[in-house]
Image (cartoon, rainbow, N blue to C red; front, side, top):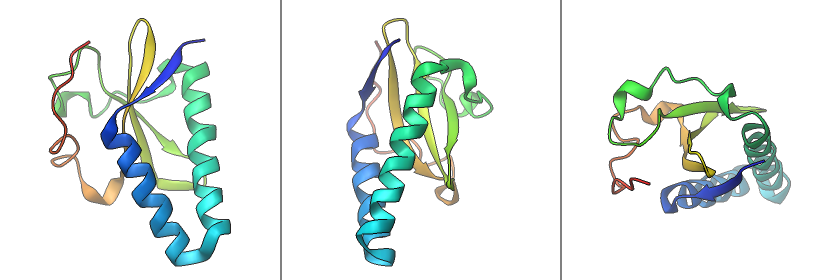
Length: 112
């Protein structure tokens, strides 16, 4: 099984979303969200091609097609990732309402 590498933007997204859930529903909701993210990332790690490439055309500066998969129980959030030969790279933990235009707006391209 491939290892998981998290981009800084994905880590920041996770921290921000977890903090928001903590403010909205307390620590229990925050921990449920983090556990759901971890579970989804594990599933992606076990089955990398499970994610849709539907949004791949919006981001063309990546070495492999961009894939996404919804976070179970928090389906408004999507895990965006690329399946590289050596590892899975988590690009963003993205709320769908934010749209695709800003998806990599604050990320520098990082070709592998």
